[in-house]
Image (tube, rainbow, N blue to C red; front, side):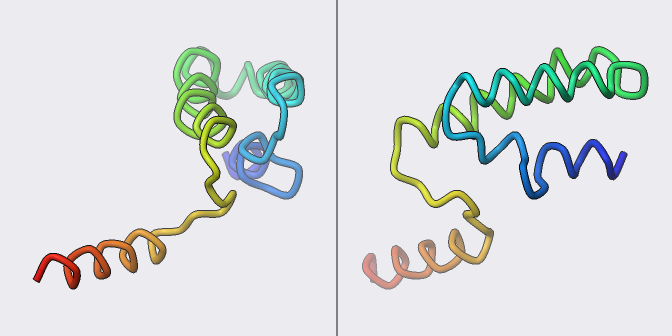
Length: 84
């Protein structure tokens, strides 16, 4: 499973694909390589979720690639201060 995670979130990962062509190519490679171990969950759930909630959002909005929970917590803190 760590190999699958590396393919999705590693150095040349699926989430950092800049174009739809790159994303589709990487997704196909991952699906082919891990079809036996991850089965339909990979192709029916995981890759479409990454496409919809990471890849498409990055293409339509100017978001940093590696947005972390600390970024969200910081923004939440700023919003709370501004509301008081």
